[in-house]
Image (tube, rainbow, N blue to C red; front, side):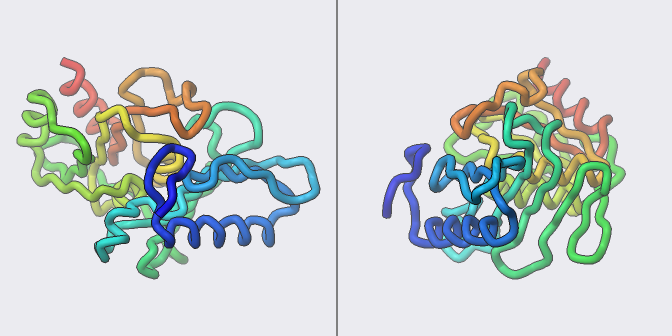
Length: 239
């Protein structure tokens, strides 16, 4: 195993997936910038780059290594310059590594799973909500534990892009990660899917994700099917 630019361990499949993504981008685009968790920033092609591809080749590497069906390739497409802000994403893809249909979204074009359009659920209150909460490397605060106890059900997947994709297609009603560890390659694509499927994504630090400049910048996120549910969760965590 090696170490990636963020100091995390790499499995052989991480490197293989990263190389496959890079070669696919080179084949499909005349030029661009790849910003990957596994290889950092790389430029490809002969033309001046218009697009920047923010990639986690295998989000949920630990799951994939153990044979758990909870991992994905995550790709967000932004213009070459500027912050890694959710509002600057033009296209996004979250692809299931187990061969199920991928989710793709384009700004103003909605979100699709294969050939079918998908949308978020209509759940507006916490007591009716199936909620995913990332807990890896952290223990829930008393406030978070109280919030989770009031939901209809709680899940934890260890793969942000997959959890967000489940919100986008209505299988989950909300996903929250308040650890302050979440970085752009793991959430930008999934959060964009949620927005384009009709949901609401909030930055609990109140900065609208404009502070993200690289893959070391972290955020706290609530993504929910409805604005009512997202704000209820945010307000309870902020009490």
